[in-house]
Amino acid sequence: VLTGSANALNLPAIDMLGAPFGWRKGEGDWLGVSSAIARQAPIQVIQEAGSDLWQSHLPAGHPFQFGFPEFADRNRQIEPAARVWISPIHRTFAPPVESAIESDLPKSSDLPKSSDLPKVQWHPRVLWVGIGCERDTDQALIQFAVETVLKQNHLAIAAVAGVASIDLKADEVGLLAFAQEQNWPLRCFSADQLKAVSVPTPSEIVAHEVGTPSVAEAAALLAASACNLSVKKQVVKRSGLKGAVTIAMAQAEQEYTSRIGKLHLVGTGPGQLDQITPAAKAALANADVVIGYALYVDLIRSLLRAGQIVEALPITQERQRAERAIDLANWGLTVAVISSGDCGIYGMAGLVLEQLQAEQWNGKTPEVQVFPGVSALQSAASRVGAPLMHDFCAISLSNLLTPWRVIQQRLISAAEGDFIVALYNPKSKTRTEQIVFARDTFLQHRSPQTPVALARSLYRPDEQITLTTLGDMLDHPIDMLTTVIVGNRSSRNYQGWFITPRGYLGDLDDSIMGDFE
Ligand code: SAH
Image (cartoon, rainbow, N blue to C red; front, side):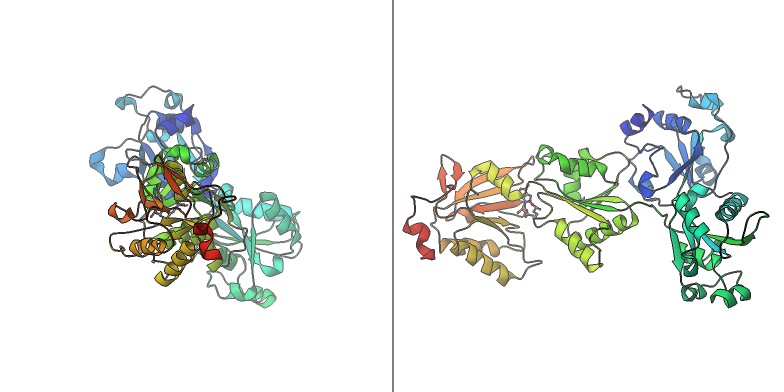
């Protein structure tokens, strides 16, 4: 019920907030904070680590206040009703206060004092634990050392991203077993890599033994891609446990998500929501991030879910869109990249796959799945009858990414081959000659009476369909929202219906066979 109320306010559920980023939930009064959100009370968020991407994708009028606005802006007199910490620090909260979870809105005079506020904490996995140890150190000692150092520094074990060491330790039994038990990745570096890192506590003895003056500190810094340590080298031993451990910790700017990213390449159909496949809808709903051209994002906005990160980008930036999607997926997020119609027909799917190849993608990670959609040529056909009943092709008249002479050659071949042709991107404000060339080319092989459909803004509120002929097609408006279908030599207009016969058996005459003989 409480999660549902966040959803009704178009807000991410507080107990799901960090899920896309692999954050771990810490202790807290989750019910108390959820109910404060449900009553639309001010919620203070203090984020000390992890991605703040979610903050910039909240709906207008959301209840979150970031940082300490009550100190920064005294005039605003903000009294938060709950607090959310997003931090590697483990905080111990007083037990929930009864009044804070009552659903009645507290009167302003008896707002809970700061210490009584319901509070929760999320732990982004930002801490990399550098570990050095003697050969055959007990797993129990490694565990004790990590837990002790975390505790001494008030750091949450849930905030640990993984462990790092020197490659000599890649087969250290206790270390491997411990990392596996915690489900932490172990990142190992060579002595040369470690040697290149400047650290606060280098050791000549270590340098002599393994060829780098620092293992724990240097490995933590490398794994975290950080310049400063959160915890300098500590040496831990314990009587009764074999070995000795050195521990250091560094905090990464970007959290480790532990998730395998996914790229969903989704075709959202021509415009109307009921023309989207259920599979594509599910792919949109499951995505952490939705990326697409602003117009298409607006068309499907009602299918999006509270808490999703939606990046609507201008039409010209297809390559940037593809790169952004891949970056987020490489980091572990599930990203839906949308195109209108079919994603793989003059859409984003090819751009994303090309870019993945340019980045030496291994074909598996991130996972890619393509969701087909109803393309403009099918939508256009559906509105005028059955023009695509025989062999057809699609030709885009846009010469932005294809040389014009190639497009010309394809038009000539299609006209000669008697293909029904769907013309995409037929005409823009500045690109007006291509459609004239196309018409003239078809006229050399087909009668001026050949039916032509001009289908604009299909399945959108301003849809406009014109059924005309090859001879007259240029007397009607054609623009970039239009798809043009040119019939073949046997297509006809019957009572306003565009019909292309299914076959020519028994109907072979010179007009069809002319060019092939
Ligand atoms: N991936 C899209 C095509 C993108 S190219 C698809 O499969 O449909 C853009 C061109 O598609 C436009 O210039 C226009 O020719 C055509 N188009 C896309 N959506 C359309 C619609 N709703 N109505 C008419 N034409 C459309």
